[in-house]
Length: 347
Image: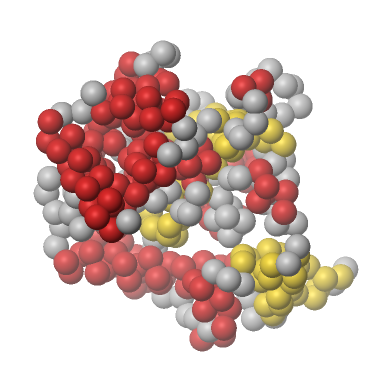
C-alpha cells in the first residue's frame, strides 16, 4: 500500500483544524454568546442570540469535549481563511481522493445546516475517503466510488439536543430541485431522498431494540422532518467518532467513524450482505482489508481494541467476524493477528 509524505499528512491535519475553526465562524456570529446549560447532571454549550421576536438558542456540544470548549473560549479570535484553505484542498487533491461535485455539495450543505454540530456522523463510502489523509495512505479509487451519501445519528442524541436542522427536503432541493422523498412502508415518514440521477441521501440510526424495529422508520427530532432507518451494528460503528475533512471547496469538516471501528463493522456487515448482495459484501470486505493494511502502520493497537470490543459483545458478533475473516487474504489475516497481539500486550 502506497503511503503519502509527512508534509501532506501535516497539511491534512492542519486543514482539519482550520475547517473546525471555520465551522464555528459559519455557525455562530459575534452578535451572540456561548452559555453553559446543565441537563441531567451534565453541562452543554449553547449559542444564544437575541433578535427581533425573542431569544434564539442553539445546541453546540458537551462542555466536557475539549475540542468544543477550547473553541468556545477562543471564539472571538477565530478567523476563517477560505482562500488559503482552498489552496490547501487543491494541493491535497493532487494525491488524496476527493468527492464528486454533488457529493461534496451535499455534505457541505448538511455541515452548514448543522448536522455535525448536532453530533451526526457521516458513514459509508463518502466517509471512507476521509481516512486517506488521516492514515497517511493512498486509497484505491474503486473503493470509494458511490452513488449515495449516508448519514447517521443516535436517536437519544437527536431527541436530547433540543435543536433541529432546517426542513430536510427544502435543504436538498436547494442543491438539486429533483430531490424527492423515497417512498417506504410508512407514508408519513421519510428516511431517504433521491434525485433524477438516482443519487440517494439516506439517514440511519442504530437499532438497539427487538428485530421488529429493524428497517422501520424512526422519528428523529433533530433531522428537519426526516426519519431514520434503524440498523443493527450501527451503534458500534458511530460510537466515539473522530473529525476529518472532505476535500471539497475550502474543505468540509465531518465527523466520521473511527477507522478501526469502520474496518471491523465492514467485516461484520459483509456477512449480512451475503444474504442479499454479493457485490456489496465484496465491497465491504475490500474496504475492511484496505483499512486493516493501513492501520497496521502505527495503529495496530486500535484495530486489536476494536476487534476485542466487537467480539466481547456476544457470540453472534464473534461468529460474524470469524466468518468474514475467512474471506480475507493471508496477508490481512497476519495483520489481524498482529493487531490482536498488540492489544493483548497493552491490556
